[in-house]
Amino acid sequence: MQFKSIKPKDSSLVSYFILSFLRIVLVFVPQLGYIHPDEFFQSVEVVAGDEYGLEVTRTWEFNTTYPIRSMAITYFGLKIPFSLLRFVSMYTNYYLGINLRGSYITLVFPRLVMVTLSFVNDWSLYRICRSYGLQYQFRLLTLASSYVMLVYATHTFSNSIEMALCSLLLYIVSDCMIHSNTVIYQREFLEEKYRKAQRTVEK
Image (cartoon, rainbow, N blue to C red; front, side, top):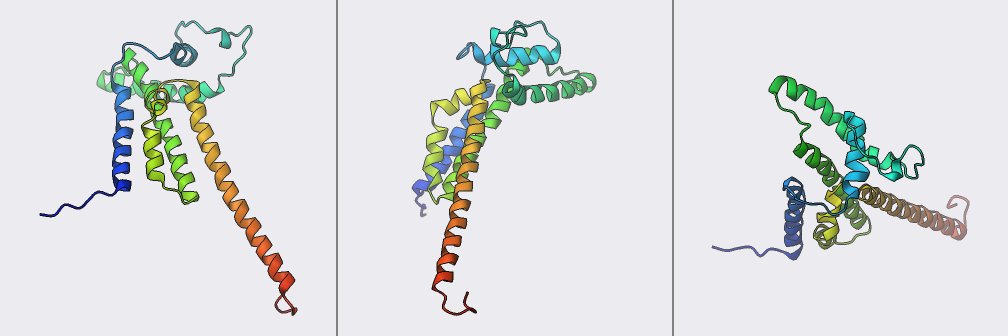
């Protein structure tokens, strides 16, 4: 019986998918602490208070008297998912008697949104590597095994949303650079051919 040898590229992709699955699993594991208070006090607590009409303590950045930060990023990442959860919870509570607005769901659901958003970074890296003809397998493995992706990208920090948006911006810029270089090269090529043309028909 013969066994086919696993190529390094294939093994890197297998390791990447395992780490990606681990990134999702870590969201559902009960945690007894937090990395930084901001992942609750500057995101989940503020949005959940506005969405569910709860009495919460707004941090000084979002104080209505002297606000110094915008809630746009946080609302973009959490307000819409919380609204969807509240809508679905009405039907599950009415038909199935299951309340989706418990403490565990309130903790896990935003993190599930964040881990979904974290894969924007992976997709952007993949697209950039493919555009420039680079090996994406090892780079994806490096990204997926990093502490930042396994921990910070799965928590409700506004920086995690900004990281995904920045990665998407880097992909758009790199793609525009390739198209711009192609257009410039074609224009220079045609101008050179036009100068070298001797006859009117060639021009």
